[in-house]
View 1 (cartoon, rainbow, N blue to C red):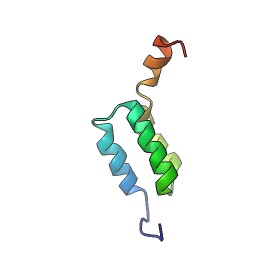
View 2: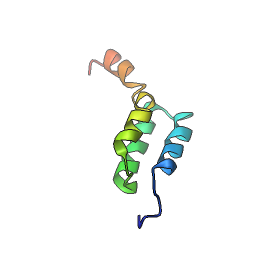
View 3: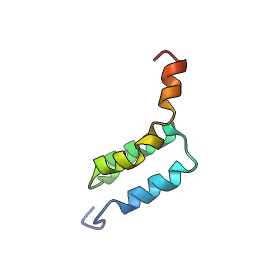
View 4: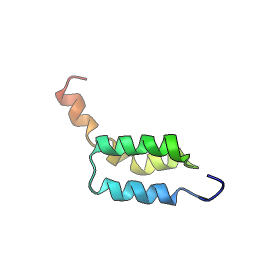
Length: 67
């Protein structure tokens, strides 16, 4: 990214805004896109901050779909 982004605030704001209206499945897809295409400087910190929202639908899926 040629040093244009010094930190991950852009990705944090993106996930924060999406987290207010998106499902866990949609947030997982967004997180993958950010990891794959945007090269965040600290992906673990992004994961730790948003993991609850990213995974909010997994418990239900595991309990009701015998996964």
